[in-house]
Image (cartoon, rainbow, N blue to C red; front, side):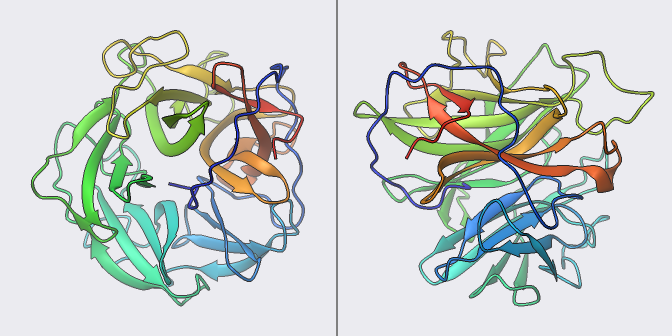
Length: 334
């Protein structure tokens, strides 16, 4: 998951949810950012990985920037022999011991001929990554092997979620960061039967203790991601960030109203379009020692443009209401 360190922090109640605030801010290279993943190195440097261009890397001294382009993670693409292996998607990065693990997807638009790959590095620098090819998750007509996200549970177990369209979000247990479990087939953990025209995808698993209960939050993007005028979807059907939660990392996810997110199309809205923020998604959650808990994402600013190169990087503070449900806020939770 995009929150690599588990912190036993107290639940801060009594915070009132407000209207969506604007993104906190971004300086430097803040555009052409799709499906961002942010992680901080031990020397304090922030690394931001993003879809396209063999996984583009940017670095900054702070989450707000200034961000500087550093080049691709895998300049030669992936060794996975599928179409799209030089235009990689949906990076997911974790530090485990002294090694950084980068999960990525190989696919092309609208295709189920996809695979999830793995690369490793000791530094995260551009060109330092060694590609290990496919994780070996079998293809199936039930799901699409894109948008990987690793959860490291407090007990040390590993759980990889993935999926888009085709029954939406799946999960598979892993024996270690580089090996899937062959004893368990991928299983469905979230599905929206009412969303047949647009995807539920971009899952992000996040563990957070609330009032003594370990909750596993499943954030995901729902709706139409990347349309351009004049082909924008009806208002409300564009990308948005949703959440469900469970007391188990492997399922039983429900939304704030108790609606099952697998069998009853549940999901609670966390962030939707507002002001100059259109179709936010591709999200991740992180605890920043200066800013507190944050949610970051890509979005379209209609005053700039809707094309791929116009997608912006944004983040907001993330707080919890009295019942332990997350919402974006204009105030920090430290």
